[in-house]
Length: 267
Image (tube, rainbow, N blue to C red; front, side, top):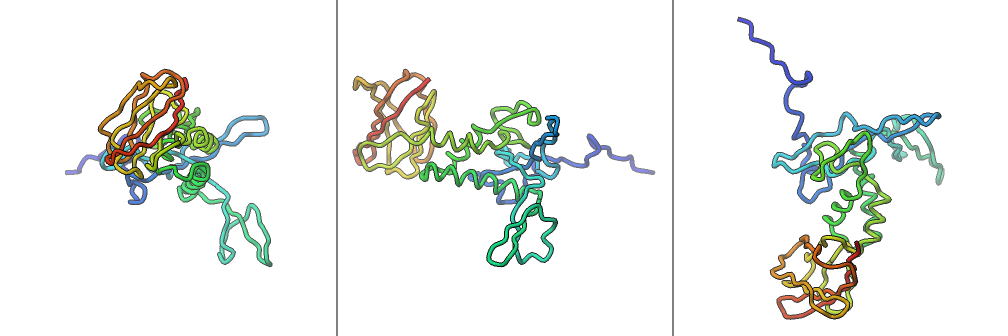
């Protein structure tokens, strides 16, 4: 007997999800980057392109984490080529220096979109050298833009677009606006951001020495909020009960030592 043909949805065999296959792209502390084709416009202003590249992988990871985190330009991106490359491709520009001609050629791939995000993170680190990797990831996600191509993305991320298209300018601008609360006293190093804050703050205790408690004092010196049993690493704290204004934040560590920071709540 003849076996019946097996038909797949949309003519595609198998499950296209769980496709972020490279080990370096699925780590919990990795900012994973998808690729899209940059939008351009005709002479009459009609928009072209802007959608995902056909080669960009589908998430999630096998343990159901959303990947990628962000999408960046990865189609026909002009990049420098080694002067020793015997077949560099068709140059879109050249630079001559020291008797050699260096070519710029268009390439496609997440090997192009990844460096765009890496360069953006480098600028963010220049703005705040103490920024942690997850602070960078959260800002990149928070400032990602959406448009007609991405559609409305869920707040929990999308398994092809991540949190949207990279917005490098907005990411660096947010770093400059959310540098950690200024430390006035004490020797315990921790990061409290954003500053100004709204409804919640991030507290990064990765470099601190056993900070277990935070106390918030308003401008009159009144203690208005206490957070106890803090754990190592980064955590989010709800400050929605605090009114807009300037606060002094005191931290207490396991040695009984205090450090003092200034935090602005702004709504």
